Length: 615
Ligand code: AGP
Image 1 (cartoon, rainbow, N blue to C red):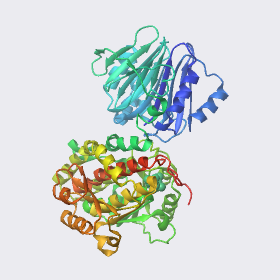
Image 2: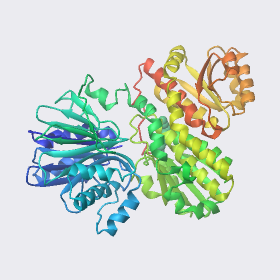
Image 3: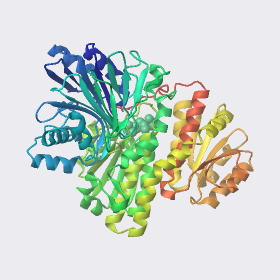
């Protein structure tokens, strides 16, 4: 997820674009750049780092002039964060520049074709391929920039919000969107372009939000022209009056980043398997696995190291890997693993999971494993992070920046990546048959919509949170694939509401924790239809017979648990190994609403940091 900003009008573009980029840094902050045009000179300035770093570089150049400007703050998906991979990107001729938020899935074949036609590339990005495709179309067909953009985008597969400028055509910018947001601020003889309205809300409250599959030519000389990318059909632009303030916009209209990120999970899961999960072709494509498939197939053991929520995702992965790929998996707290002189063999594979890619304990565990000859694979969310550069190979989650300290979309996208790896290996090993494999791929593809359906329980969950917000303790129980989700639910409640909570395998109750049960102990029980259901029902009855309060997370349509629990929250039916992607959602919302009702600082809970880079 990146941030794009543009200005075309009568004012100096530089300060407007820079301030706008700062407002969008919550969307991505690993590199930034700006292109300015003063009618004669097109000047591109870009750098690794934050917008403040861009300002420092721009100050030294001291040539930031022009009333047309496009700027970009990056969240890398292709190509590590560095100056060259930063946006804007020039076309080969230097006449065109582009900024892009999204992922062009078929950039590799497009790049091969362009290279064959004599194009050269300076960066590793998909965006540079797109701008040269546009140039190639424009030159070969001898057509306008607008037409070239339209034709080129019909050859691109993926998601984009772009702004493109041709230095030979003063006063005109072409924008387009598919799968990534793009808003046009309409002022008095001036226009603003942005990923959301926060960069221009102080200048104008009139905005056009392009729909998916639409493009627009913004020109000072003539009216804004909106059309369909597919066929160029004109669209009547709808200019709406914005009634929201700056802070609300940055949080996408949500009260907190955490809630916004909970609701981003369908999109984040979809982005994570985009281009990797191809159910109709019966294929899972992951370069980091494909290039090292023999190491994984010959591995005697997979060791997973992580901390916190990422460790819980590793526990889910243990169940999934052993269920499908039949490879022994051990999950270790990185902080314990690094100090206990573990046995690590050369044919071991170590998978390190880290949203930030900067967690000190996880990094130390990686270095130890490498010293002892293991192959190390990383699952990170931040492209170019220290851990992603330290591991031999890896696969990124494409969750976008996770600003809230409490991990939510990182957890579900980590499970998504790990499930794809497990299924990829299972297919290669033949430990699952073809029909089961195809069924699993198609079911995985349904998960974003099932997460969306689960999110529809939010109002009910808020009502339940109201009932339990003043309790001082809470137990979370789960079995099998959902035992780690019970741990994760407890962590969520602890870290943002400061209520003591513990997660246990449901069967462990009788080995001690049941002594805690009385009318003051709420117990969240994950009781999905296929997860040792009968045994969980008897766990619930044991709790109820001791006056415990039970909140059941059940499969849609369940009536048995509804009859005995105090509350039930339903999730759509899915395959048991995929239920963690759904059962975690009510637990995220439950902890969020309790914390809000208790007046806690949900996005920055006390004593915590988003990335634990110290021991
Ligand atoms: C979970 O909500 C916390 N933010 C924390 O436990 C986190 O998961 C842990 O610090 C690991 O961080 P990482 O994924 O960035 O390595």
